[in-house]
Length: 329
Ligand code: 8YV
Image (cartoon, rainbow, N blue to C red):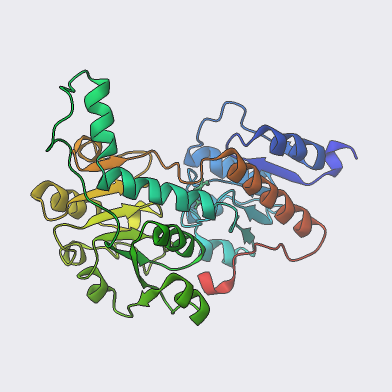
């Protein structure tokens, strides 16, 4: 098929090579070989010209951008699970179909969550830095003491796919599983994980040693971990966030960490990405990573496959498998 006859697809960032190769075969595609993030003007131009936009978490698809949508724009096929960077209400009003890529980054994000729990609890980065900077004086009975994981209480906020994958791993480390979610998990899952459901988040916060966030960022979860709620966590507790930075009041978190109100944090996401408050990575009790929870070749290829499948089923006249449901709105 001649390129002009194929659906026009605009991809905002560089994707894994096999995905881009397939995109070239299937679509009249515009790729971003330089992988430079697009500003609002460039995004507005993209939606004015294309039929299908493939954005990522680094693109802010707000109402102003969507107001530039040309008559051809029909679909936003997001490369990623979270869709809080897309104004879903504006997209719905314009009759756009929005899809995401759930399920294929679950295990990798759960692995990274456990890595952060271990890194903070056992002071792994502090130890590695000591050695790398040539400051290690040798073994000592009281040097770099962390804490044992077994027997500690893990509180999971959001017990969806990723929350459950974290719980499964955490059981192997002897952690007790507590969780708060919109609804309890089915009984066999709760039994397998020996997980205790808390219908009140505030009550759970006071009862855990580790809080790990796995809910989506929506208007309801924005700053769910407010200054008041962060104060409910006991001082020995650590906070792990591999979901979205906006769920936590970052300024209040920094205050808690600096004042000793919280023992530590393992963070992969931030409120104003890519800007990270410079105080965070400097704190000795913080392990701060650059949003890499799903950064495996396997996940990124599977995410790309999902984007391809969603677009293909849509252009063939079917409901794409990962269409964002109305319940998100
Ligand atoms: C993705 C993520 O890499 O899928 C998500 O929601 O946060 C990341 O793991 C990113 O969204 C890609 O757009």
